[in-house]
Image (cartoon, rainbow, N blue to C red; front, side):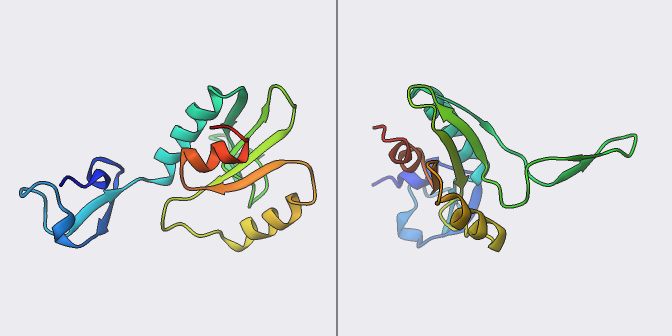
Length: 135
């Protein structure tokens, strides 16, 4: 029986060797999806479900001529957007199956829950669709 996890992702993860689908695979190694890959899948899915969404970069960048550009504040979610039909803001923090929220992300989650915003932590497209009430 083939393991569907072998066909997904970029990061290595140790898994019992009897789950391997092909004898040429290194024993006990499978790949899991990176947060970047999950994020791209969520962006594509939400875009096809009556939403406008984009990647949100947080922190600061320094230009070649040494100017500092402030981006979103630390802790801001990975995806920002809105639903077309309701106008509600969408904020999604993306984590892979092993990812954990940092303290600044936990503070943001607590802060934003007081507002009528579609917010959540997603590990898959299905998680993101549940946030917007899609299928």
